[in-house]
Image (tube, rainbow, N blue to C red; front, side):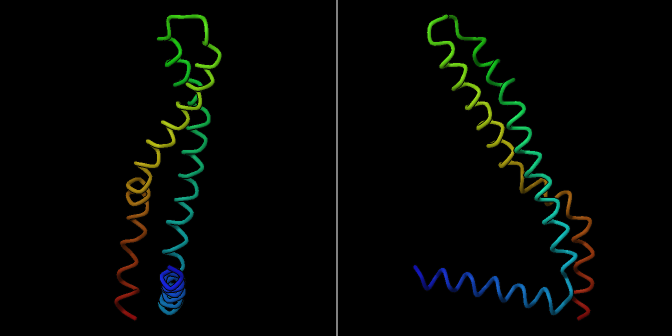
Length: 112
């Protein structure tokens, strides 16, 4: 297990060497920046819309007893639901937004 961990760290070091050798830092930083922005947007959406989803879930509860507990749990569940849906779509959105920048990556790496 420790050997696998050190092999993985060595692979990251090798990737940094290749990126430096071919001067591809711009093509690494742009998708990284897009990922950070999208992750922040997903976090904000999950935090902001959890009340709306939780309120909708509580509205179908017909009783008054236990409504406070159910409301708290529904808000948490709403945030987790929005975050989970965001994470499912995260990779596809990052690839779709970053693909115009990544198409230029082929030319510099094949020339060097």
